[in-house]
Image (cartoon, rainbow, N blue to C red):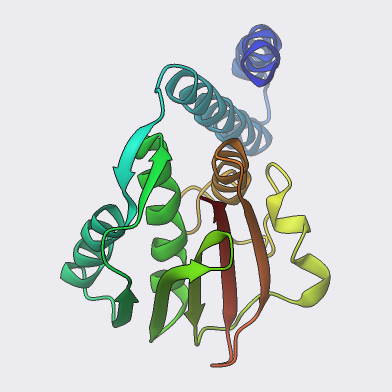
Length: 200
């Protein structure tokens, strides 16, 4: 559905871009061009997601090894991460999609926090992944809003500083497509806590 809507919106956006070129007010035209460019970037993000998620098949995956790799990459970029995972937790996953989701969550934490704690283990009938950080967090009233497409807490977050407002939407969609759930809360270390539960 998202892919279809995105394709349908391309035509009016193209028409808007052509009409903007004919505006006499250069400042207004430049501002509108920026808006249209950002909208096109958002649509491309949706389409890339729709294309990628529609083709990958689940297979038995070592979740621990997958997250090990993501954490190691974040640490190479300078992230301060305290990490502990139980050995070899095998789950049916679409590994590329799942890796992108975990990468997005850890990158977000690294962007806004000085210290990150990641714990992975068995909890009752599920595997639980908890990502805590000591950053500024997210106000309680926005814990659900951040999963809405294009929602951004700070107006200043744009393509150059904070993405297009799709990362958390796509991440939760991917987790739910695996039968899991993703929830946000306040972390005991002061920032944001991300809790993912995946059925065995």
